[in-house]
Image (cartoon, rainbow, N blue to C red; front, top):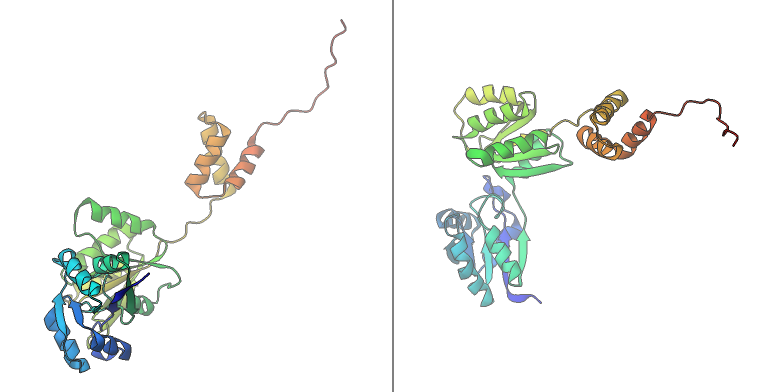
Length: 292
């Protein structure tokens, strides 16, 4: 059973204020309290929309965990709480995830007013496959965790979307080139929906040169091509791998499992090949038993 308070998550423009939808304006006008990253930015948005500002509560990276209780108390009073970020959809590489999770767990209705998204805008404009994709957001800034994520991207077959700040974008693209190969395709989008919007397309190697040519400005979205599907191994390759393992002393079942996993081929195919490799009995005369 849902409780009387309602949390309304509202997507706001990522640059062009004309992208604020009529439904978003209505949701902002009906809010009894608005939870936002920067109260100054939100007041400007409300002014543009012609909406009188209700009570504004700052909810950002440094205080979201503490503010969850405050917002839950508002919801318990039956209030309509609107959650916005400075740009785009809250909880996507922005504050809001904890607030939404807490409200849903406590039984309050959560309504979403969808709208602008830098990730989807860049993906659509990239010219790369859009049927399957993954969103990585901001990579870890340093250390083994960053290296691990880079290694995972090397084998990720879906198109990958990343966010990056202007002062780090050169280093990130260079590292992607080293980890994924300089020939992997990428779209570098910046200042989406704004006056100086730009979507550049090329390879990772070319992207390094492109970014070196001018000082990076604005927020960046990097859309990276997925890893190529490996070519299916030839039958001779599968047979050779099987022979190597069988001659090393592995039993047939273990050898089949190992080869299927290593070469990414169906176990059924490997089993059939393993069976064909088994020595067959040579035809000959039947020996008759000696007379007693």
